[in-house]
Image (cartoon, rainbow, N blue to C red):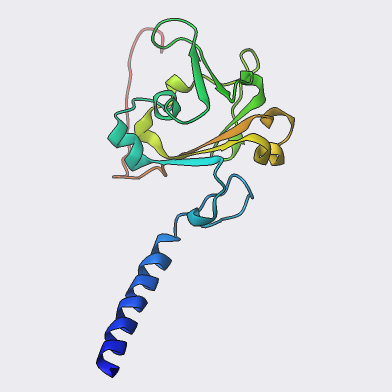
Amino acid sequence: MSKKFLVVLIFVTTLALNVRGEEKDAFITLTRKPQPMAELPANMSVITSKEIEKSGARNVSEAIENLTSINIAEYGTLGSQTSVRIRNSTSEQVLVLMNGQPINGVSFGSPNLTFLPADSIERIEVVRGASSVLYGANAVSGVINIITKKPQLLFPSIGVSVNYGTFG
């Protein structure tokens, strides 16, 4: 009896350690403080860099276009202005943040997300609905927080150039 109990105890302990290790991922947008991924409400989505890479998305616009209740409107050919709508709202009612700072444009409301390359994104956090009220009047229908990767210094370098010419 004691051997079976010991085996079950070891099994349960290793399961608890695995679950605890998964809580390192934090979601910051809704409460503005770190929160375990398991405690997120249903109206929130997080897209990690691994998921973006698997999807083959080239920019942020392509990465979020398949999320529920998100509509990306393109006003022309490749590279033209795009707008983001959440739950059939206008683009002015969606707040887009980059590393927690607003980047909404003045003319169209939402920034052109086709110019943000997908390989520079660590994760994208999307909050839909009333939970986004913490961010003010521009976040009526939702918040999109784009977290970029930290820059990596490969090798420090120094450059020197000398020019000579008629005009100095």
